[in-house]
Length: 460
Ligand code: F0G
Image 1 (cartoon, rainbow, N blue to C red):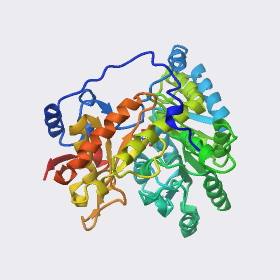
Image 2 (cartoon, helix red, strand yellow; image 1 turned 120 degrees about the horizontal axis):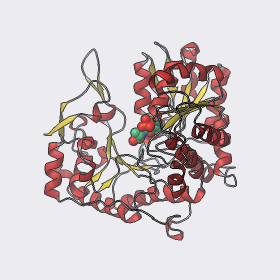
Image 3 (cartoon, protein in one colour; image 1 turned 135 degrees about the vertical axis):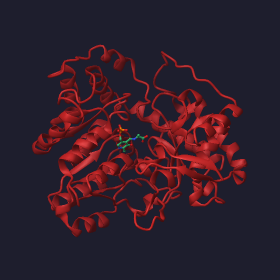
């Protein structure tokens, strides 16, 4: 199924390096306390191995750096826009392209064009900025992920799939209030879990029955295609490009955070085959993002994106990238650390509830684990649990907790070596040894939306 990792090495040579520095434990204790126990508030120089996100953190290739020099910085009609458009048409088959400063810019223009108050946007599991945009429109985000997608230790493929019955039930409540269905590939919030082609096809068929458009959140589309190739019957002999073409043929368009699978540090786009959606989206694009042919980006950024979108389809690259994530997962399993199974495309997700069973939800176990991993090894992950996804009931003020209490260790693309992964595993093994001594955190400050970015904590 997957080639063993010792049968190949990284399919690239390293041409340029960026030094990183280890801090002492005492320094880290002081830094994290000053940061209010929130890892977003740390200066990145105080981090040794930064697994906060795989977004905008990729190492670009020599071809991409060369492409930067070809950027056409014209305000209108930039040549680089047309290169980007060609690359998207070639891979995804979509005719209309709106560049945006990043993925959430694309979400904004799509939602503003299509979502109105009282609507319900159905998806497998919306990412948090997507959810934020839906809420900002006065609409409701509805997740239709199949149940197994929430069961962390169940090792089955395609845990990003929709529950098709639930999707139909939600549509039938009132199809007129569903502006589109959004398929997030891979599904970030439950572990970078892929969606199968069979499921995508079925979602598209159901939506079409009701005349509802289908969009993809394509941030990690190539990683999803790689899983389809290796895990789904009938795809082993197809290229990633062919699989991507088929996948996108089931939709009307996509939003894309190019900071992931376009291997660039900034950028995004909305692409569609629907001219009227495109026209409406442009009305929001121009005042918020910039003119149609640059959308908040420099011409050089669009050039690097056009190249990155092509190179991410390289199977040797994807084998190494997803193989590295799986390798980290295997090291952690060997060390007895509870993780979401199977490992997904872009990171390993730690099950903080299983690792710190003595802590209550309002002790924020995932935040505690993320803090301890930083103190132990200077490693920065991100909490995806009660702080990121919990909220207070607006009427009763009671806490509403999400299903999962996870810490994500997102692996940047082509940035760290397997030795870095080993360091992460050994630091976590040491945290595990003293897990029972770890005390809870209490929230001392929270913003009304997306509170995890700026929250402050104190030790219990
Ligand atoms: N959709 C998905 C599935 C994402 O993971 C992200 C970002 C976005 C949309 C928004 O894109 O950041 O370019 O505006 N995810 C990052 C992460 C932040 O760390 O997972 P953006």
